[in-house]
Image (tube, rainbow, N blue to C red):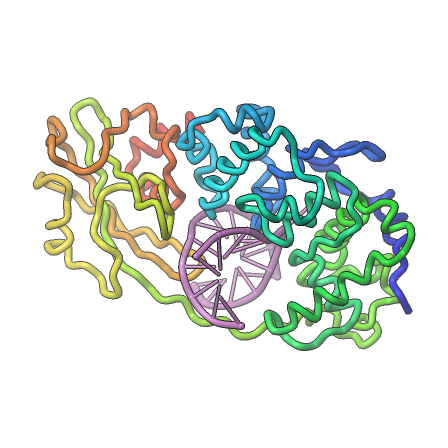
Length: 356
DNA sequence: GATCCGTGGTA
DNA sequence: TTACCAAGGAT
């Protein structure tokens, strides 16, 4: 049995999620809203994105407003959301779009823009412009792997899944309502065809689902075993002057946490640091107090940072980095791992809560 | 194709 | 607690 496009659309008309970046039923979404939300939603949950989306839209209501903003302001507003290359590409893309005057309306045109890959190009084309394509994200991969009972594990099965998924919108209804159809797939994946405990009893495609027929829906898609994350150790120093200002430095423009702010500290290595050794990398030779150890899990490594705190009357003139006034920490592009360090220091934690 | 790139929620 | 995973992209 072939999954019915009209059955899915009928379900969508009754159960669609109301999301800030979506148009009202029957209306066309604003391309800027679609683009901004799609970039934020890359590997990021709807619940997390909502607050950031609202802040961005308030500060940058249009593509032009975003294009004219300083890059560091955009990075600071993005801080905490992760995958910071997205913010840099978002800004670069806004400047291109401001020059071009409008969004490309084809998959290929969108695909050529920074930060927009195969998935996002299709998502914007379908949602904002009604192009009859299927954006294949994690939801669609899951749905397709179940509908067609594809048992080969990801990521090897990715190509096969994409090919089968592309047949889902063969119907006339799906092509006429390409925007709704794409979002219907997202909503189906988010609320019915979920990774764990799928609600097959409520699914509009239940009768067409090969995995459900075999009783293996919940076990799909299968995934190859993941490698264990390596562990890294480091130390960092929260140094304040008499005014309460904190010393920060900028990370390199490439690699992990590219271009973000951080507390000065040691390199991250495979073995723990003895405090006496770590202290040689302190920004100034003042007395530091150990606050504790924070653990932060990145995509591909687990980092354990020993956090030290110290005071000085005034910062030395030859230190690399910059002083951040005590009341401006929230305005910095501090990634979450550094905010965790800050949270060990009571004064700063209170300060952050009032501004963020 | 494999690896690198964040973070928060959940079972 | 560990492990998974969420509207992926760039190299």
